[in-house]
Length: 341
Image (cartoon, rainbow, N blue to C red; front, side, top):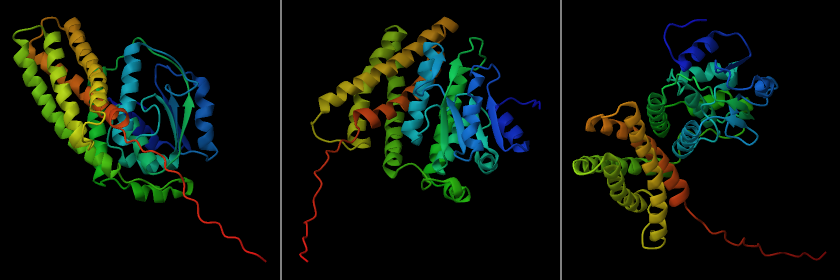
């Protein structure tokens, strides 16, 4: 079947909806995934053990050959999914997936994205409905002639994460109904949205992040007139990073007092260093692709890089820097009773 309009999601949604097969699957056209994994992929679906199956390049037993840049992007993206949408699957974007037809016919009408985010949205909805997702470690070799626009894809994916997260938070998706319809294979109660604590944290983090980004851009432009772009970026990020960590510590995650404040700031500097690497790398890439680009082009590139860095920052803040630590309490024993016959 040939479609004149591009879009991986559009192609899969169109063909899967029209198919009369009991199990639907796809793989990337460049055959990056070793096809010896086809049978392990579809077997649990045919047997009825699982509802969806995905190839994973990030699981134990996977053998992957690809560049550092794509490896870093893939891991960061899946970390963002875990931190923002509480995703439990390990690899959202591996182009090697299968689904039972009856499950697909229930899920596909709810999936809005018709591009690269299609896979992620499908998996998030399935997982929230309590469906079982089987993962298969794959052998995967990167295609050096890939035509995927990484920047455009990353921006579209982040927009998709925001859209799906907001829909889950306000209960706009019929997750519970979906789980009930497919409940004969459901092992857990569907979750209508992210935990309330995470939703509130995301809201506060977003406000602080917006203010920090504006302050960062204003400071960057002010410093850019007297120093080179990398140094202006470093100084602006450092100042805003310290303030951002302090604000998130108190407002987003409710940590007060001086206890571990120095440790939190040092960990925040590590998070800052990752953000610096992303933004500096973006500036370096811009200098290679378009030497002599003006300040406004630099700002546009930095906004995109900061969007990725912001998602990564929330994940690291929540699950590393300000993670809740609880000490186990000794179990209380009920008083023993002896009965004499």
